[in-house]
Image (cartoon, rainbow, N blue to C red; front, side, top):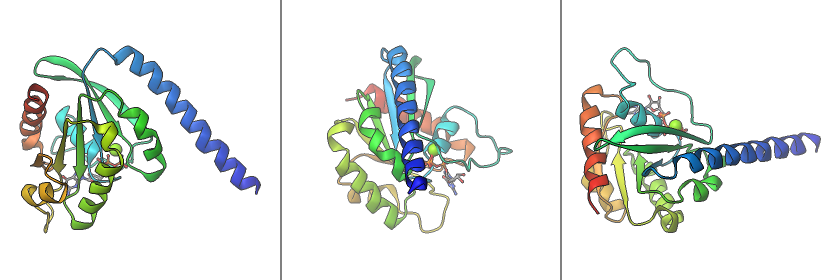
Length: 188
Ligand SMILES: Nc1nc2c(ncn2[C@@H]2O[C@H](COP(=O)(O)OP(=O)(O)OP(=O)(O)O)[C@@H](O)[C@H]2O)c(=O)[nH]1
Ligand SMILES: [Mg+2]
C-alpha cells in the first residue's frame, strides 16, 4: 500500500516537474517554429535528432537511454531558428503529449518500419490526430535492418501521410534528414 503511494507521488512529482520546465521553456521559445518528434519508445526519435544536429559520427556508440518526458533543443532549418521537441515514447509519458504537441508547426511521426510497430504508430496518429494538426509527416526509420517495410508501404498503412525512409545510424544521411525538414517546413 505504502509502496503504491510512493510511486503515485513519484509519478505526479515528475509530471508537475516536467510541466513546469515545459512552461518555462515554452514561454521563451514560443516565437520560434516548433517541430515535434513523436512515436513509440525505441523507434529512434532521439537518434534522428542527434543525426540532424551532427552528434552522430561513425565512432559514436548508439544512444541507448530512453528519453525521460521530453527534450527540447534549438536548431536551424532553412537558416531560421526553430525548436525541436523530442517526446519520450514510453507509455507513462504519452498522457503529457496533448500538452507538448500544442502549437506544433510540424509533427514528425517516427516508426521502426516493422509491421507491428507501424500498427502502433497508426494508433498514435489516431489518438493524437486533433493535436498533431494538418502538418504531419512520417519517418520509416531503421531501414538498415532486414525486413524493414519501405516508405510506400508504411505510408499506405498510416493512411497516406507523406513518409520518408531513413536510418538514423547512417551519418551520410544527415543532409537528407535536413533536406526533408527544410522542404516540409517550407511547404504547406
Ligand atoms: N539499426 C538501427 N538502430 C537504430 C536506428 N535508429 C535508432 N536506433 C537504435 O534504436 C535504439 C533506440 O533509439 P532512441 O533514439 O533512443 O529511440 P527513441 O525513439 O528516442 O526512444 P524513447 O526516447 O524511449 O522514446 C538505440 O539503440 C538506437 O541506436 C536505425 O536507424 N537503425
Ligand atoms: Mg528518445
